[in-house]
Each structure stands twice: as structure tokens, then as C-alpha cells.
Length: 494
Ligand code: NAD
Image 1 (tube, rainbow, N blue to C red):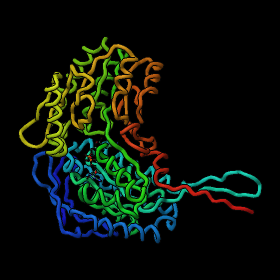
Image 2: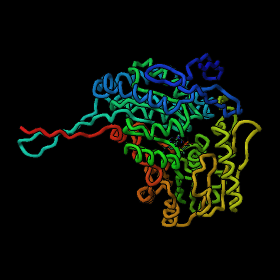
Image 3: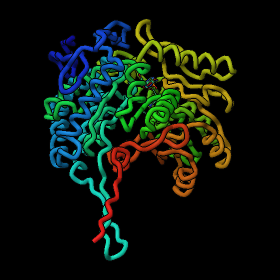
Image 4: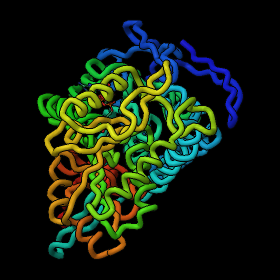
């Protein structure tokens, strides 16, 4: 099929048309069983289009194509310079199509056009450029032993890698995955989320236009229990990189272990603490705390969903934080004045509302929000809970919506214990003007990222990933390259 849309947004107008098939071996094809997945507009619950439903058989076809590309035109057959050049081509094409990519993201996911444009797409382009720069700088070491031996290491691509994406940052996480994999010479079979397949399909077109050889990148739309599982179990895929929930991450790792012991990178959930000491710059802390939990409608793995505030400033913080949250303007993601669009799907809407109910029933206070906004689409008002206890579900589990809990604490020791009392360890933040105290706390938090006097800062060259059940491995930065190469030591006697 083909998706055609006439845009008429304040920032962009024009027509887009692209294929909704599977992208295998450089061509768009229908799924082998002819199934279709309906894509829903979260702003009003109506269908946008239908995309092909891939199957395990389609994964097989894509893996064959990817293996052939790896053995003939990519992998050790493409120079680093060529790989970098093609990635740079892709970045340039993304830049030329920034308006379309942003509009697709807003339509499909419900995030605001202005955030998609200013953050998601901008960041995605910089990630592709960053890894383009690495492509011709992948090299090993020589290692000294004795005089009659030369030993050196090679960082070789793994081969065909499987990549599985969630729906919260469909385009951005697409680039986090393909960037380091392509820079190091792997070929890819990628599955987008069944809820947000549009930007990945548009990217397929740009990947082709950028000149990547057929089979280098294969993009499948489809469900997790079919396409996702086939990627995790496939005997010819030696590495799978997954971003999504901890629940599914566990399944992917199990499948990887049971099939061919493939390597895994897992970027999973979070319940990030945000600690605000009484010597913090209050205005700054309030703004960042709001951004921490309400950014992307709370659908961020690193969302600062547990806000710990020291007793001395608790009342004043809560007052200002509430004002801040109340001022967030919900509405059409394409309207320039909108701060917050709908949640991504009916499933997520229901899931978040049931968490809100569970908080109420457990005896927590709904200090703000707790209800839907408007009468259509999946909008939820920014919600603040107080009077919680550490064992409540809303304090322990990832809600993945605009729902924060504000918790009062007295001492540094107490807050560290509470903050670390979670199965997750993705990110954490500390606010204090005493750098000693802030850094001491940052170092004791069990999380892969610790922000001091800021939140949600991400950069292409800075590693991101989890401690504990938030994941295995790192994305972004030089670290991600190591997850896409096998190291070979060559010993030469002379
Ligand atoms: P999800 O786990 O439900 O789905 C993620 C992907 O896995 C989807 O493409 C889905 O189709 C696929 N999938 C489902 N079942 C599968 C199976 N059995 N085998 C293989 N694949 C399967 O997650 P979601 O709801 O799409 O995304 C939200 C979650 O992602 C949150 O928990 C969030 O914290 C996490 N996330 C983490 C990061 C990070 O970097 N740590 C970033 C973004 C999102």
C-alpha cells in the first residue's frame, strides 16, 4: 500500500506519499501473509493508514538479504570511509525532510510538532552524523609481548543484527540503533513498534536514496510476538538490540539464550528519582522537575517520576510545581501553543488510568489532575500524587504517563535509601547548590545516568543505559560501538 497525506501545519505544508510495505533487500514488498496493521491517530482515535504486517517468514527473507549484503557489499567489503559517507548522506536527507519527519512523528505518536522538530528530529540527525564520523575510526590495538611475536586486535562487525524499537521516540531511537551498527559494518533487520511505524518507513526511503546497498538495512513493521520473537530466536542473527519494557526485555534475553546465545543490548524501563535538597535553586528545580516527568507526556524511560523534596522546602516546592503543571497546555499536537498531546494509544491510556486508580485506592492523594482531558483521543491531565508510601504501585512501577509522585524526606541518608529502593536504575537527578553534597549523592545513586541541577540531558557522544533491571549495555557514544563489534586477537610468530 501507499500512505498519502496532505499536510497543512503552521510549520510545514505539502504532500507526502510513501510505501507502507516491508522494506526488504532494498525494495518495498507486501507481507508474505498479506496481513495489515491499522495505525491509529492518538489525537482522535481514528485510523491514519494501514501498514504491512510482517511475519516470521518475512524475517527469514530479510535475514537472507542482510547476510548476503554483509558477505558481499557491506561488512568487511565496505570501507569505513564509504560507510561514513552514506551515513552523512542519510543525515543530509533527514535534514532536508525535517518537516515531514516531525509531522509524521506528531501524527503517529501524538508528541507535539514543535518538540518533534526541535528535539526528536534534530537529535536524530546529530546521532547519524556522530556515527558517520566514527565509521572510518574503528581500529584495534597492537599488543606487546616478546620480540618474536606481533599481536594485534581487530574490531570486526558482528554480522546480521536484529533491532527492536518501542513507540515513545520512534525516530530518535531508530537512529540510536542503526547509527553504531552501520558505522561498524553490520547489516540490520529492524522492527519498528506496531503503534508508530510511520517514521521508520519514511526512513527506509531515505536509506535507499542515501545509497546504502540493498539488504544493508531491512525494516519490518509487525507485532512483537511474531516479528520481534523471530528476531530474538533467529539462528543467523548473532546480536539483538532491544528497547522497550523490562517485561519484554526479559523475554528477548531468554529467547536469545535459548536459541543461539546471541549477544543482547537491552534498554529497558525506569522509575527515576529526582532529589531536591533544601538548598536547591527552587525556581530551577521546579522547572526541571516538571520537565523531568511531563516531557513527552511522561512517556520517557528516564522520566523523573519519583520527586523527593526535602522537608524545609516541601510546601513551597509543591505549590510552585503544581502551578507549573497546571499551566501545561494540552491539545492538538500540531498547534503551536500546545505543550502536551495525547498518550500514544488506547492501551497506554487505560494502563495509566488504572495506575491512577490504584494510587487512589491505596490511599494516596491526587493533588492535581488524575483525569482525562477532553472527550476524544488519549489525553491525560498532568497528575501529581502526594501522601504515598514506598510500597505503593505508583511509587514502585513504571507508569509511563504524566504522573509524578512527590515525596517528603528529611535527611540525605534517608533519601538515598528511598531513591535506590527500586528494581530500576536508568537515571537519577539531584538538585543542590552545594556541589559537594550533589556529587556525593550522584555517585551513590545506583543509576546509569546521574544529572546534577538538570534532567533529561542526552548527547550523541554520551553513553546512556541502565543499572539493575533497566538494562544491559550502553547506547550512544563510543560505548555503543563496542556492542556492535567482535574483537579478534591475531597472533603472528616471526
Ligand atoms: P514493549 O516492551 O511493549 O515493546 C517494545 C518492542 O518490543 C515493540 O516493538 C514490541 O512489538 C516488541 N515486542 C513485544 N513483545 C515481544 C516479544 N515477545 N519478543 C520480541 N519483541 C517483542 O515496550 P513499549 O510499550 O513499546 O515501550 C515502552 C517501554 O520502553 C517502557 O518500559 C520504557 O521505559 C522503555 N524504553 C526504554 C528506553 C531506554 O533507553 N532504556 C527508551 C525508550 C523506552
